[in-house]
Length: 189
View: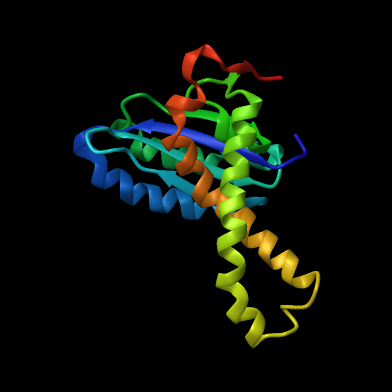
């Protein structure tokens, strides 16, 4: 468990408790950010008419993710909101990019590798066309940042952050039916 990991948490919240849950969510996200290895959080809020939240926390290692998942701080905060959650606290720790391509609630299946490749290539292709021109003014203003190698590192960091935290969770959610359609999922290894 020494490579980066994603802690995937799902909560189905009672409709009458959504406002309280949103307040609690801000508190627990701030507390998680204090833990070693924390690299960010993304909340996938429920669609209209649904009450299921998906919380995606990135950690530097699986050990870091496990430390937060089992922490006393997390348990105490969960105790404060337990009566607002209908289905309990569903938690999974996933490594690498498998998180994006594993359907919610399923740990033994993933999208076929060719679909993972196609979606990831499409996302990165678009971002490599959009991000460099957007950062050109920064590189013009600060020539040291535009130096060969430095520029590439900054572009790579921005594109990867966009992929991990913003774009892929939304794209895979949007394409979920196609990604896992027709029983073509592959077992995970």
